[in-house]
Structures are given as C-alpha cells and as structure tokens.
Length: 312
Length: 162
Image 1 (cartoon, rainbow over the protein chains, first blue to last red):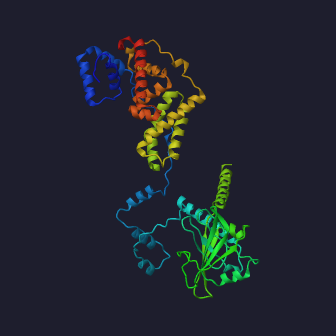
Image 2 (cartoon, rainbow over the protein chains, first blue to last red):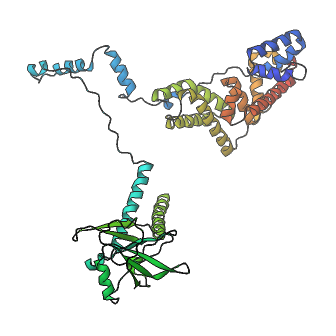
Image 3 (cartoon, each protein chain N blue to C red):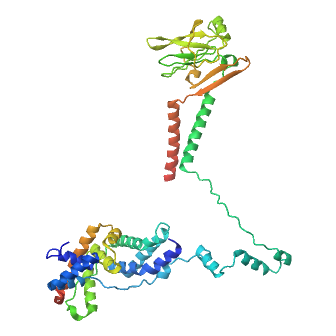
C-alpha cells in the first residue's frame, strides 16, 4: 500500500498492531522521518496500546491435577535414577535381601530374557462384521422358513417331480416322470401334478421314463394348463441342455388350483442315475421379494423399537 | 496432551486468561469462576487438544463463557468508571495508563476484547478471529475503529497528545 495522506492512518494502525512485514515497517518509519508532521499522529495511536499488566491468578494450585504416582512419567523418572542397572539386577538384589529364602535359591536366580509379548487384540465387532452377521442371520431364517413351509411328499410322489424351465426364445423343459407347475415371468417352473384321478395308464407310462421333456402349449401367448410331455430314451442323462426330441407326446391335465407346493419358491431337479436305487435331487431356492420385504420390515421395526426405547 | 502438559498450561496461561476475563467483566469472583470452567473443559478434552493449541483453546472457551456470563447476568459497566476525569495527561505514565484503561472500558465488549487480546496477548488478527469467531477483515476493521475511538477519547482530555 502506498503511503499518502489517505492511507497513512491505516498503515500506522497496522504498524502499531505489528501486522506489517519488516519491509513495510521500514517504509512507514521512512515516511515519518520524511514527514515529521505525521509523527504526532503515530504517537497518538501508540498511546492507545495497553501496556503489560500482570494480574496473577491466585488459585493455580486448585486448577492443577495431581499426577498419579504410578504414571509412566513417574516410572521413567524412577528408572533414570538407577542408571544402567537392569531391572533383573534390581530384582536379584531385592531377592537377596529377603531373609527367608535359601542361599541355593538366591544363587540360582538368573536373569531371564523376556520374550517380546504379543498383543492380543479383542474381537472387535465392527460395522462390516455386524452387517455380514445380519445378512447371514436373515438368510438362515429365510432358509429355515422355507424348510418349515415345505410339505414333504410321499416317496411315491417325490420321484414324480418335474422341473420345467421356459425361456422366451426357445422353451426347454426337463422332465423326470411327472409333476409341478408354476409360472414366474420369463422362466417358469412347471409342476405337473398327476392326480389320482388322472389316467392311470398314462401315469404308468411316464413313471417308467427316466427323462422326459415337457413343453407347455400356449394359447394367445398365455401359458396353457396343458403340457405335452415328451418321453425320451432312458439312456439320456443330460436333460438341461437337450433339445426337445419328440418321440411320444401325451397331453396331461394339470391342476388349475394352485397348491401349497406351487406357492413355494423351492423347486427340485431330479437326476436319475443308472442305478435305479439312487436318485440325485438338486434344490434351487428362489427368493420371494414379497416375503423378503415383509421380513425386512419386521427387522426394521424391531430396530426402530430398540432405538426409541434407548431414546426414552 | 498429557496430564503434565495440562499442569504446564495452568502455570503458563492461567494468569493471561484471568487477566483477559477480569479486564473484560471487572468482577473478580466471576472471572475466577470462568477461568476455572475453562480449565475444567480443557482437562475433560485434554485428549483432543494439542499442547501447542492449548492457549488458543483456553482463550476461546473463556471468551465464549464470558459472553454467556454477560448475557445471563446482564451486567453493565460500572457507573463510576464510565466517565473519564479531566486530568492533564502529562501527570505521569500511571495516569495515562489509568485514563487509557477507563477509555477501554467504554468500548463495546467486542472492541474491548479485541484490544485486550491484541495488546496483552499479542495475538495476530487471524488468531483473534479464531478465538472470537470473526474474519480477519472484521478483526482489522473493529480493532482500528476501537483504536481511533481510544485516540479521540485520549486526545479530548489530553491536548498534549494531539
């Protein structure tokens, strides 16, 4: 800032507040030396600066905190008094001073090297672990719920499960014997259920087939209640990738009333092996978003209740 | 900050904090209470306060507690100290100091605190701004106004200084 009549007061105030750089201070002093009329103005401003005034606070000792005698600082000071003597030496000397100990025991005192300790950190239940545990707990509850709501089928009908997968492009269906129906958007699990009232002769036909393919017939784009069951050679053992080979087609009535099994989101794939006494079941769990949403709502309400109780 | 650092703060800064408060509110017991509260707060929060920031922390806490105290008690400057006697300034340095202090007591609380922090503690504009929650420009403007007020008051009663 250039020193002149309009700016000198600001510069003088900064000067007495010690807010100018050394170079600027020299400029101000030079300005006053060249213009003695401004010296009085500077003196007047300097007179407004309060001089040091010592007012002691009488209760300092009351403010101070008593240092703990066993604090680290005290131990360090105590340790420094012993100089280079090791703690084992001090301990040995102290043991020698104890009258009840035998001389043999005192002489056998050794300086033992202390191995470096290992700090055992306690289990910290941080946010991530809590999240994982919560997810695992929810998953276990959901699986348990699914297992409880599942209706066990008799052995005769359990072997009649059929899983059918449909896609929009080329519906493929893997069928083992006969059973269930359900529709889920693009993929559908069809459970063809053969009731006791259905044709016993057709039922027996499919019971003998190890692998079959079922394709639901469509009526104006809607899934029909009828499915064409295609019987395949029993030697074929890869139903998931196989195209529908039509060897024998039979139309079967499918129950229109949804059963509990149809509501359940669990479907089974049965793979028959060559051994007639051995059957492999592959379970596929599908999460029902409505049930999951209800479960999530209950968990949220539980946590909200706990939070509100804590606030109270 | 360790316990030892805290005790060092008591030794080094208690006088300054007490002087700053008692000069502002001019009430000894209240000033002692404010200083005690400020150091209690420092003790409670000593783990979060760095030793080099302890002085600024103490003045900040004490200043805000003083403002709260003034608001609660609604204490006004003492009547007998609001008027400056007509005395020639050249009677000595003690009289000049007394006149200046009485002029300072006529400033508003913000200007008074600014002058005390600047002259007694030597804080920079930035440090004063942090303590009083003001910008650097505000500190500069308010302090310069206070200086000019003091200058005018002194010159009015001491023609030799003008």
